[in-house]
Amino acid sequence: MINFEVEAQNEFETLVRDRRDFHRYPELGFNENRTSKIIAQNLIDLGMEVQTGVGLTGVVGLLEGDHPGPTVLLRFDMDALPITEDTNLPFSSTSEGVMHACGHDAHMSMGLGLARIMARHRSKIHGTLKFVFQPAEEGLGGAFAMIADGVLENPKPDIAFAMHLWNKVPYGQAWVTEGPAMSASSRFELTITGRGGHGASPHETVDPILGAAHVVTALQSIVSRNIDPQESAVISVGQIQGGTTYNVIPEQVLIKGSVRSFSNKLHRQLYRRILETASSVAAGFGCAVSLETVVIVAAVVNDKAVAANVRHAAQQVLGYDNVLNRKEMASEDMGYMLEEIPGCYFFVGSANEEEGKNYPHHHPRFDIDERSMMNGVAIMGNAVASYVLNGVNSKVDSNIELVSN
Ligand SMILES: [Zn+2]
Ligand SMILES: [Zn+2]
Image (cartoon, rainbow, N blue to C red):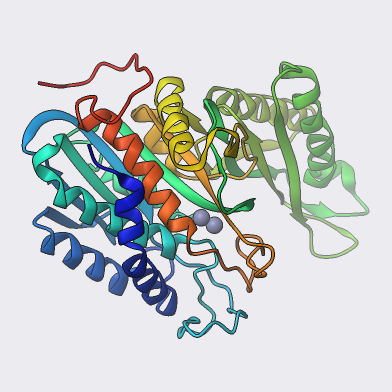
């Protein structure tokens, strides 16, 4: 038995020290060079087999328990944001225009804390823990880059966990959801191509502005006419670009927009309809269409059984009433990993209104109640333990077949 609450309390000073160090030296996505060096060294010092350069700046540490069992992936993100910090904290960013304004500094610190705790108890562990420190979570495709570099192979994880400190939730609470937890999100670019010419001779042109106007209108029929009313989806056009002056019909119009939904299947369906609708409407006006999807973040969909275990793990730490069942319309690229591996992504409350630590994520004054890091470590520790400590820490139920002794 490992008492993760006590272990996390004992780690508190180090958790704070590491978080503040990462906070002072933030690095943008795929540029986490200092950060990943520190993480790699810490994991090497714990006797792990460490791989660097996974997805450019990602780091993977393997901790083999003394007994055979499942492989559990624990993922922590590393990147900061292009924001100028305005907190006046003594450990404020020293890098102009770059700030850890999402809490990833604390995520890495919790990851290292868990790594130390687990390494101390290696003799009790039945299985392998794969500590994954991921670059470029903020819309840059870091999870995708790591998967392309093989992070989900050799060994292939049986279960995956990730968490986010969340300032919508007060310190002392957590959100755990069975099923969809965060939405799939993507951006698209539709190019409508006609034939340009003089505005006074429209009959000699194919007008892409007229075609584009009808396409934008028709796109709004997709959510209302093609999607099950019990599901949620959004298609928003945010930008139209075409033409240079009042009397010239241009060759092309560019339409940019954003799509969100809670299921990846629904997302694919939305894109099929966007292409079908846009190309047939534009064809009616003699125009051609090309569609490019720029970034797609998969929906974060939790495995029901794994999420039930995390819920139980969180209740042990925070008490029954402090673990709520909520989801978020925001997005996270952990969805890519959870498409391949059953797992759970959960939110750990980090706000403290009295101390003014309740600014939203990505705000220049964002800060957290640092005690929330102890909760994150204890909850994830309990959850992981339910798979690798051979039933010593309690497990609610699982229908996942584990590769076990
Ligand atoms: Zn963020
Ligand atoms: Zn974040």
